[in-house]
Image 1 (spheres, rainbow, N blue to C red):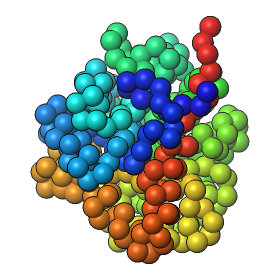
Image 2 (cartoon, helix red, strand yellow):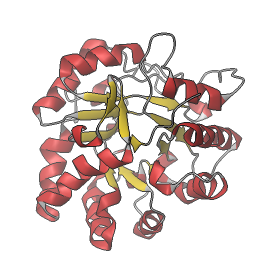
Image 3 (tube, one colour):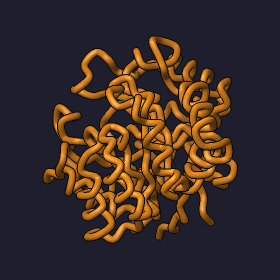
Length: 302
């Protein structure tokens, strides 16, 4: 049965609801010193604000070794009434002060997807990996190979961080070409940060999902292009592949601080999408596409 793997158990995709498809409740990186997302009360307040705005689900793309605080997620989901999906996987090497010594990345990813994160955390529902700026280094290729292996064992979707929105074609060549992951199981993130419509259309023709995070405070330089990019892709026939996320990566970016945070997707972007396209397209992007993107026919183990 095809389900979305939330931190409280597997869901019928139709029950996921209006979804922030790429965000962070908790995050720690040596590239963001002093800006950690590590406050449970602040995470709860952000989820409450998102829920008031009409939000029903959040996918946390924080991977292994970056302070994801997975054990906190089930109670946050219960108390907020917001479905949460956790991630396994690994980010770029630059985010770690020391890369963990692991015998098998694929084995780690599989364990976190099927048994749980750590000794008492929930199961992850996706794999997060990352490319580099206009290319893939050895670390990226290694983590993507592990992600592909874990996908083939479990069926899990793979979300990809693209550094400043670049190297997405190289990622597809590796994941879908060489490693034989179906494009429908690949989510290409941060594409608004490199708003080349020709490349976007090429990526869309592959069948992969295209994820945009215009409200991101840390990468706001291309926000003003976001609506035009979404309209162009929708008018080219790719509305069913579009995803939106807030990608909150610092405490200052929360709506309860200096914003815009998670609610912005619904209070600002949704009405603009409805005006530029129509209400059914906005509903498709925020509700129906995430339900398909994060659903998997989870393969039994053993």
